[in-house]
Image 1 (tube, rainbow, N blue to C red):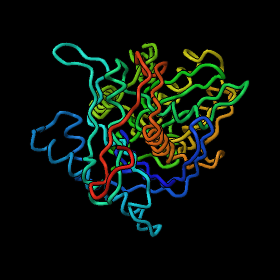
Image 2: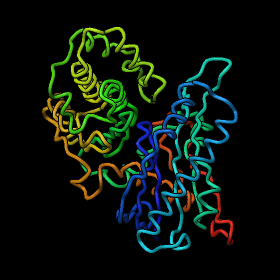
Image 3: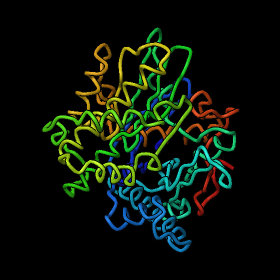
Length: 380
């Protein structure tokens, strides 16, 4: 069957959209990536998302509107993919949409409770494209007392687990997260910042969305004092299961550093942030992996940052650091593919959280269904 996966992450690049062919029982899954694209967010959309994430000028009107605005954007991403391949919504079994995370609060102090909020109204996608939509994957894991993240390990177990070998799957989006697959165990957690701090610095100093190929970082040495401060961040000492986001490593955190280190050049700050990201990844594996993996398969936008990849490899000299392309998948498509698999698990009524990664008390089925409103859903 055909399925479309949608993912919009903490980097706010846009909507990653993957078209896949998927079939078979989950323990013998067959999946082929047919196409991948990213529908970029307009700058004003990014600004509205950031306003909500940062708690700036928030109103119930803005949040209400943003949910539907994102729904229209996700719907357009689906339609673009369908039109490109001459397909109709009815030709696709389902769309699996992660949505845009506006806030993720896995740990909370009174009066707040552990919670998570992803937006992008599924009804708009279902109505516009005449297709079944599965979304809101995180909330059931949190209902089961988990952190609602990471969710990608389920798909990684199905696609990458090997006999008699430990494999690490490292995604570097806005946040970096790792899944360590042993033959009989799974570990998965957020390592810390991925591209987030680097991207914020590039926007602040140069008006650019990211450090292309790591050229800026490669042009300057790190600042040892700033680096020593960064690696003392308390998140690194938290034991898994754990997850993080913009709340810890976003714009406010970056601006505070820039203002406290006025003598550093832009290039030094970007270089130091790049080494911090590499350190968080290597440190997580050294500290928390039950055994050293033989390979680290990198995905996400960070896989295209050659300088970041070089620094990760230098910190893990005995690990083969490679990208998703070696396995026939786009490094950018990994998370969107993961949600295709999570949608397929929902379709088959198979629990898809990994309690050892999220801390949930139970295995649970993830996702909510918004059916094609123009025909009976085969789910019902």
